[in-house]
Length: 80
Figure 1 (cartoon, rainbow, N blue to C red):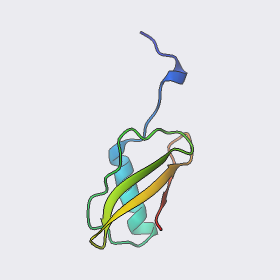
Figure 2 (figure 1 turned 30 degrees about the horizontal axis):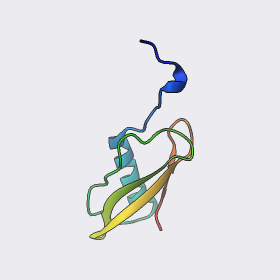
Figure 3 (figure 1 turned 120 degrees about the vertical axis):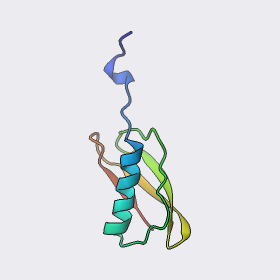
């Protein structure tokens, strides 16, 4: 069976997303990440698509949010 192109949803690679979020937290925000970053699988590569990842910052549980910016998979990580 052949699927039309509009029926296929591209998603971010979960492991790459988790590593990328960790890197942003450490390098851009200068935070001490003390637990693995856990992001959801299946985040659609659609501009405006939001996602939330869980981790620990300085030993405290934290939720980090992000948003997909472009159709090529660029995203922004927000830390309050």
